[in-house]
Structures are given as structure tokens and as C-alpha cells.
Length: 174
Image (cartoon, rainbow, N blue to C red):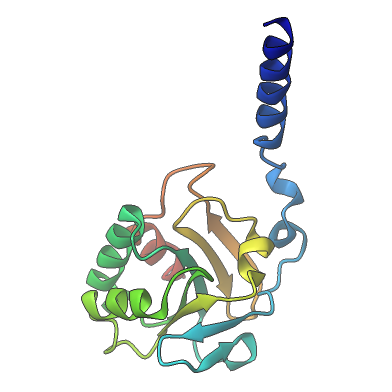
């Protein structure tokens, strides 16, 4: 019994130590302010990469999401309601590699995103963005300016989920 207690104690300590979150200041996107290289697989099986980002938008917003995440669904629904105020923003919705393309297509269709040429959606098969942003929760949102420089992030681990109104306010400041 004594050995079982020691083993359980060691397992508890090891599990607790491994669950410690790294200091956010050490995350790659905090050290490198440029939009990271990425390549996402879209639901139509074509690729979309960083170098294909349109240059005619004032901001690029990368949203790492999960189609079955309630917060992601809510955020997307609210963004769609405000799209008239977000015409100067290029959106890249990115899901984890384990999400099926059919799930992304269903999400895309459900929120009626097709009319918006400023929205791209795909999955991250090489976990490039997942590791760059050190994502553990969704929706994770990273905002970049016209020059591709980091402006702000919304990470659900360290604060509330981004509200569409906050984004509208940020991208329409003069």
C-alpha cells in the first residue's frame, strides 16, 4: 500500500508539472511579429498559403477554430452579422489537422460564408499555426495590420473570447 501511495503521488506531481502552461511571452508569435508561413487545405481540396493573402485589405485576421466549438460558432455568427463593417479585413479560418474537410464545409455552409470573398477556410495539416501560436483553446484570434505585423491576439486561456464588436472597433480606428 505504501508503494502504491508513492506511485500515485509521483504520477500526480508529473501530471501537474506537464500541465503547466508556458509563459505567453515565450510563444513564437510574441517573438516574431510577422504573419507566419502557413499552408492550409481548403474544403475543396485546394491549398491556400500565406503568399496568397490578398494585399488590398487593411488587416488580416487568423482565427484558429473548431467547427464543433460553441464559442467558435457564436463568434462566427456574430462576425457574419458585422461583415459590412469588416470589408477591410481578410479572414483566414483555420482548423486543426484532425478535423475532416466535410466538417469545415458544413460549418462554412451553415454560416453562409460563401458570399464573402475576404474569408478563406481550411485545416492546418502540418500543425504550423497550432505550434506557432501555441494554441490550446479555441477560438484563438490573431490580428495583423496591412504590413503583416502583429497587432493583437485573443487567446481564450488568458482572457475572454473576442467579440465581433471589439474587432470592428479595432479595424475601423482612424
